[in-house]
Structures are given as C-alpha cells and as structure tokens.
Amino acid sequence: MPESPLPNELKTALESAGLSVHKKDWSDYGQGFPLEVHNADGDTLSLSLDWAMLFSRFDEGQIGGAVIKDTGEVTQSWGLARRVPALAKGQNIFESPVGLLAESVFRGFPSHLLLNGVRLLGAGLPAHDPTHLLVLVVEAAEEYDAWRKASLSERKADALKRIGKALNMNQTQQSLAVAATHSIASAAELAAVMLWTYNEEQNALELAANVGANRQGLQFFGHLPLSDTPKCLADLVATQRKSIVLAQAEDSPLTAEIEAKICYLPPGGLVVHPLIVGDNLLGVIEYVGRADDTAFADTVDLYQTISEHLALALHSAHLFEASERLARHDPLTGIANHRAMQDFLAKLTENRNKSSVGVLMIDVDHFRKFNEEEGHDAGDEVLRLVARTLRDQVRSHDLAARYGGEEFTVILPDLDQKRTEETAERLREAISKLQYVNAAGQTRQVTASFGVANYPENGNTPSLVLKAADVALYEAKRNGRNCVATAAQASPRPMEIRPFDLSMIRGYVSDAALAECATELETLRRDLVALRLMEKCGIEGIDALTRAFALMILLPEETPEWALDLPHDWSVALNLARALVHAGPSSRDYLRAGATVWNYRKGTNSGYLDPDFVAILASQPEAA
Image (cartoon, rainbow, N blue to C red; front, top):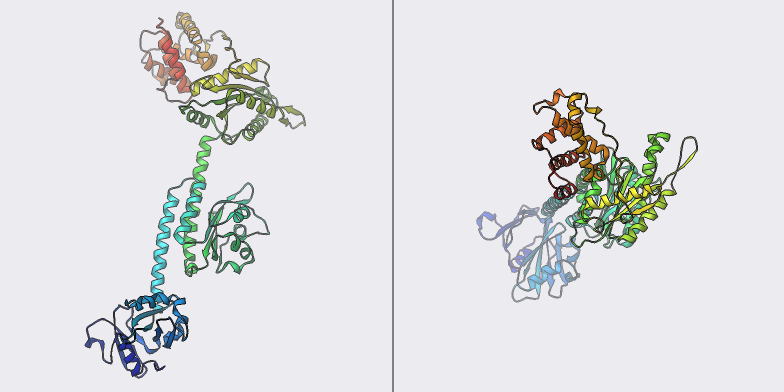
C-alpha cells in the first residue's frame, strides 16, 4: 500500500474494504452516512460509512488508516494512524484496546471505537483476503471532548444527587460523616475519602469516617493534633484553612509517604478542603482519586461544591446535637438532666423480661450549709466535681444524672442488688476523696449519702423504684450520712407534722371564715398525711395544697382571679381544684384534686394522675 495520504490507490483500498468512495459531492449519492475528505488540491473524497459521525468534513491530515493481519500485526500504516501508538507498523494490536475492535471485525462485525481523541473504524478486506482488516482512523478530538464533557456532567450530576440525599437523611455528625464518605467514594469512583471533624477543646482533628484506608492509615490519621509542623495534608489544610490540589500523590512529600501506603487502591490525584462555615472550622475532607482515573483533574470543581454542601450539613448537625444536648443535659454539671434520666429509666423498664436495673439516689452531704459558708459559686463547683466523678466512675452504658439541687441519680442497667450496692459503695468512696480548697486556703472535704434500689425488686414502675431509692437515701442520712443504705434496710420516714399555718391566706378571706373551717382544714391535712402523700410531696407540698383547697371552699365560685392577686402556683391550684371538686367534698375528692394540682406544679400534664396517687385512691373508701 503506498504511503501518500490520498492517492488513487487509497481510493481502491478503501473501496476494497467495503467503503464507497466518490470524487463528487455527496449530494449526488443517498446511501450510508457521509464523510468528506478534502486535500490541498481542492479535491473531495466522499466516503459512505455504516456509522454516523459527529462531524462529517475533514482535511486530509485528519484521516489515516492501517492494515492488520489476523495475528494482530500492523503491516501498513499511513496518515493519522501513525499518531496512534497501537497502530504503529510492526505493533500487535491484541495487546492494546484496539484488539477488541479487531476481534469483532474478524468475526464478521464491522465496529468502531473512540480512543484518545481519534475514531477508529474497522472493516474486513475483500473475501479473497480474509486474513487482513482495515482500520480507518479519523480525527475525533472535538467529538472526544464533547463526549468527555457530557460524561463529566453526567458524573457530577449523579454524584451531587446521591450525596445530597445522604446529607439530607442524617441529623447527627457521626451518621452524616459515615453516609457522606460512602456516598462520595461510590458516586465519584474514588480510591479513598477521609473526613475529619474538628475537636475545639483538644485543637485536633478526629477521623470521623473513611472509605478506602487500611488499618495502618486509620492508626496514623485517627487523631491529628494541629501544630506548626503538620504531619499530613489534613492538618496543614486545617491550620492554613486553604484547599490543596495535587495532580499526583507523589507530588508532595506529605502524601508520597502516606497516601501511597495507606490506600487499598493505587492513589492518583488529591484534593483536600477545609470545612468552614463563617469563621468556624468544622473539619477537613480529603478526596483521593484512583491512579487510572484520567478525569479526576476535571472534577476538582465538583469536590469544591461537595465540600461546601457538606460543611453546611455538618454545621446543621452540630446545631441539632447542641440543641438536643441542652434539652437533655444539665447546664451546670454537663451530665444528663432529670428528663433524660426519666426517659432512660422508662426505656429500660419497658423490657418485658424484667431484667434488673440498679437505681442510686445520691445527696451531697450538708450542701446547704456549705453554700451558706462558701457561697454559691463554690457550691456550683462542688456539684460539678461530684457530677464529673459519677460520670467517670460508671460504665459507658450507665447514666449519671442530676436529679435536682444537690441530688443526683445513677441508673445501672443489668445490675443485681448486690452489684448495685457494691457500685454505690465504690462511688461513695470516690466522692469522699474529693476536696475543695476555698479562697482562704482551707480544705473542705466532700461526702455524699447513697440510697440503693433495684427494679423490679423494689418497685415495678420507674416512679416506684425511684421512690424506693429515695426512701433508702433518707435512711442513709438518718444513719449519719456519708454511707450507703438499701431499700431493704430503709424504714418509713417519720411523720413530723408541724402546726398548720393559715396566716398566709388571711389576706384573701376573713378571720371568721377561717375560724369556721379551721378544724375541717386540719382534718383534711391529716387525711392527706395519713394517705402517705407526704412521702410524695413533703409537708410543704401538703400545706400548699391545703391552702389552695381552703381558698376553693371559702371564696365564692364567681370570684375573678384578677381580683385576688394570688401567687401563680396558688391561682393554678385554685382553678384546678374548682374544676375538679364542685360539691360534696370528701377526702377522696380532695385527694384527687390534690394529686392533679401537685402534678401540675411539678410541670407535668395537668390532666395526668401519678400512678402512686391512683393506687392510693383505689385503696381508700369514701370519707365524708
């Protein structure tokens, strides 16, 4: 075959390969798909192809061809074909991507292939020479560029869609980090993705999630303290708060010795972005491309977009967790609050197998006296010390909570009575080692009393087992404090009933009216005490209820609340009592109203009756 680009011999060769070649305008012919080649003399060679080309007009320098034997050897090559390494004369195409095209042609199926900016079209030679095939090579740089851009756009759109779904479906930082790294690695076909979150207290990056890093990488990247001498790109980016893009991992000494060793797949390019919202550093994400991904450099803008969306999602997750923490943690001590403790205990006791749950009620000894002598700031510090000790001394799945004031509660899942008591003693000893040094340099020892109970042995509902632990706590105080008492050891609290003071409501009703009902009110008060309400409310609570009922009895039904100028809790008690008790007052009626009023004052639903009160009511006969 001659070596010149477009001689008459080439026309013959092309025709023998099954292509129609004409030296006329294509409009004179109407079969196949046109491809016109123009030479320097102004001649036009029109080819009729079995495939449609994106572009149909070429100059003679944009076309070429090669003849290939069935053994894969390239016997002749001319024109543009010489720029394709696989089609160089003497090469074996079966060792290159062109081999698939050749195999298809030798099996009788003309084929074409887009490869690195050229289009290869293969067809067999005449039947008397079945051992050779012709590969026509056509310039396709613009076609390849258009295809590459379309492919990249599709890849980016698919990646953003999948990653956006992962970002929207997770509210916590940890679940978001795991979902995001897996979605990004899968959608963008990366060798590895590593996501760190910033720990402000330790000024360090913590590896929250990763895909593609081996065990050695996890050990190296797990905790990265930020310093002036960065160990890797992640802490460098976090310190400088600037992105870094590398064409290859070997381009930086920080990555050549690390990423190349810790990735399961051979790494290619790298993109590392800081995750920042406003002035707040939330973390760092590193994208590691595959060594064989030729499109990685063209998707750098995609990783910038992903990082921006991820930073916003992490910020939202951080705010969500902060609000959840505020709702379920005590702001002074940082441990769980009363609500979180009640929810935790309720979930544990919902278990039908009735596995034992240990409950500890803890009271800091002589705390009010300490507060008066040292001040509230010192008292707050002692509460924080006790809370920290409880939190650090219990298991990860236990719960230490602030019950209120100087009282704490510890919930111990799956602990029997013996082990619960042992845990209480261990915690008591730990607290007794605490010391507070005041401004004068004096050392004050901190101690606490412990009440121990177990579910379901000492109570088959959350309220009952807490009550049992509270009674045990009272026993520990009665035994001299700084000790542990169990529900089995506890004796009922003595009923210390002081005289009832009616002076607090004299401004609302006349002395004569009070004198007429004084005996009735005292009887009511003693009925409430006898029904064990003092264990629930305390004598102060019973007195408050009795005063509210006194107003209910003595004031006219139509008296407007604004005319009374009552304290808020009294007015609430009065309105609830009026709604519940209309006529025929009895101890049971008063008790029902009292239960509702007390629940309301404790912040629960005003229509809810505590199970303890319901049980007491059911056991009491009507009493006029």
